[in-house]
Length: 432
Image (cartoon, rainbow, N blue to C red; front, side):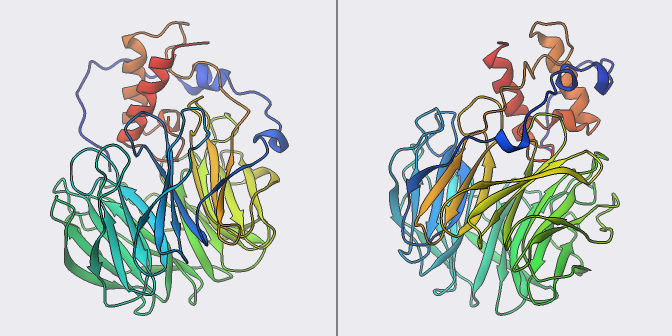
């Protein structure tokens, strides 16, 4: 959901062909996008990974849920994409998924886990320096599969949507603004929710839900009514059981499409958005062996959204190079640790391109793959005059307002406040 922002005098939006982002597209060998993995110790069954600036120093840190140790580990970034040893904090019984978000409104990211065996959510508030307070537990009365964080009811507080596996439903918990939550409603889906994604699918400015269904083999879409309540789930069938979903603009039309990882098999499903939150028919693309977790972003700097997926059966990350039409022009794999159950995409070394990290469930560690294609020229020089001035800010705001994917500076396939922050960082970094 887009944040409010100051209004500035409008200027003409430059066509894509004249913008330096397009000009800086270059040949980046798909097989050489990433340097070989570097592994960092995590904990027993490092099953879920998330990325965020936990200590407020401007770089991205790793947060990992250790399923068999019943804790989460924080690995602080040293600033160049290498990480300190894990500092661990108690969570619930078998934390199956981890999410990061500011749930108490103090400006720093907090950590939440959903705990499969204790059937609850652990809330660990950030002390502001990357250390976490002792957990608070929110009972669910059902086994949770995933949690996503966002302002569902537009009141300025962070809310939660939690998949309840045994009850085949999504539970909405509305935030009180202080890190506590109040139960609001349960919403039925087709069956067995696995991983979820939260963003604006129908273009009305509020966050909607996409949920992977295992037993029913499909993507459930629940559209937000604007007040944190949701309509009936629509199920879009796929050929196999799904494990995860990711959202991003794969075909360049300005709305968010769905890529889904499967419980078994050797491909992923892509369902293109019709613009109103309805999804088109499934298309399948080769991925790897059991591509559980998917993520989207521009990995090779050509301005098109690519897809990365963690393949648990062959211990690889596969990368599909997008062509901007919803299809892909290349497929490559990179070796990672043992049984990579989760995948995160972010600029870990601060050089302006997107890196990858996996949580390796049997290897008990995290694999970090640093992107060696970039930096991709001078991305903040949006007016193409070779210098960074206020006119580049004006060009960025116009591109953002127009929904142009060039404004997706954090590379996650959507336009949010974080793109403003990423543009500011690119501007501050200057030109080579």
